[in-house]
Image (cartoon, rainbow over all chains, first blue to last red; front, side):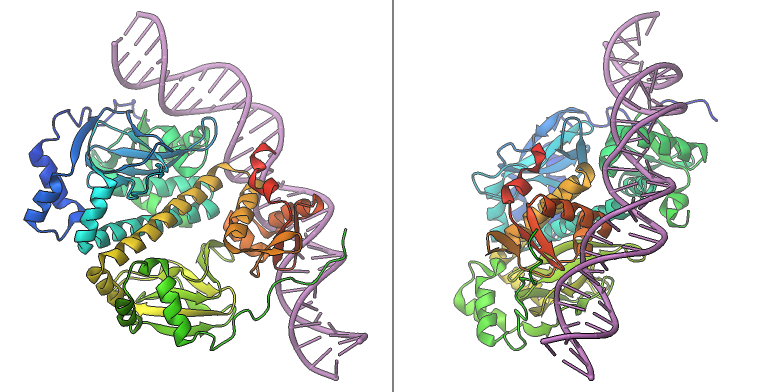
Length: 248
Length: 248
DNA sequence: CGAGACATTGAGCTGACTCAAATGGAGTGG
DNA sequence: CCACTCCATTTGAGTCAGCTCAATGTCTCG
């Protein structure tokens, strides 16, 4: 096979201070949950948000921390995980710019249900949950937008449950690669690069399996020229195979 | 062991025509998603709903059917499932009175993501999704209530995913029994009866395992006097054991 | 160039599945 | 009320996908 090439991932994709006022407003304006909000309302709403930069690997909040804020990804990727045992984690989702996370509850005793970690350098806006609830109360559109987002996530979560229940490990991994490439894929060479540092452990935590098993399956896929992969990166060479693995 | 007693489940719990106008209004008034709505608004809203009775085992809608309606359980229990392969199903949730299901989307090409089946005789209200969206647009409170419900379900779904990923089958089943007894448990004799016909297959479809495995585990639990069980029924004799199976 | 983290590969084990067959409740009709 | 039938449930035996444990290989970065 080819000599191992160096990582094709963009490095330092996100710099500090890139999260300017202009970018903030632009992001909020384009954010799906503010769709349909007038420009002046948007300007008012913007005042409630704070921006903050997180380095790769930095924890934004921990599972079970008191939950007070709703957050919005401006730039970068955020990984949501839950811990089970010792080193057993479950990777719930990876978020890209425009997506929300954190809590919407304004109850005092509420805690975060997952841990949020910056998968890359990232810029994140945050708002106090009760402020966001006020916004939703004033603007039913916003509440409905957030509801639609949450519903879509619920459907997706149930889909994951279905797949975990019924598919063998190899097919679960194919599907995960497929979904990741749809969400984060960028053309690269003659394939689609998943533009994100992604370890075997990340994939294992998504598929509910072990790093070793992921490694074995990825090795086989590479041997069959369906993907190319290296340390923390994956490209899909044959999307059709990945998408239609049912027949295999 | 004791002689097998007859099924302790209430029969014909729900009769046809029990779903009266009075009950409808009462149910809508108590429904979590209409919490905080004034009485006259409630009266207006009530006009949008239709009531319908379903017999045990009757399908309310199928996965992939065109989705047009949002529904509310008035009486009985509704089972939500998804199909995977041949006889492989996944049981997503069992709903009790006051819970909503169906779709909130008003897009024309939308379809249901799951199949809804009456687990017992049931009475169900339904409303056209776009009408419900109008109600949410007029009353942000309602939208926020529905959002809170959906968020809670999302968290619960992720919890299920976590457990499926990390727990061995026996503990998954303990947890399912625990959750079911919290939601549907009624005192019965010296235990808590899960008031609902519940087959080994239902439990298997919840736990992502096979009926035989469920049967083996339930037999062991019965032998240890932790539960008592028969054809389509379960009582929990030792809730503490079920709840704290971590130590076992 | 060295260290540390990530990844690969091998070997053996086992929890849970599948296939198969027997048993037992619950409703039905006579 | 009893016999019968259907279907849920139980139990056994054999198999294997995927895990764990362990050792080795290889990027990346300082």
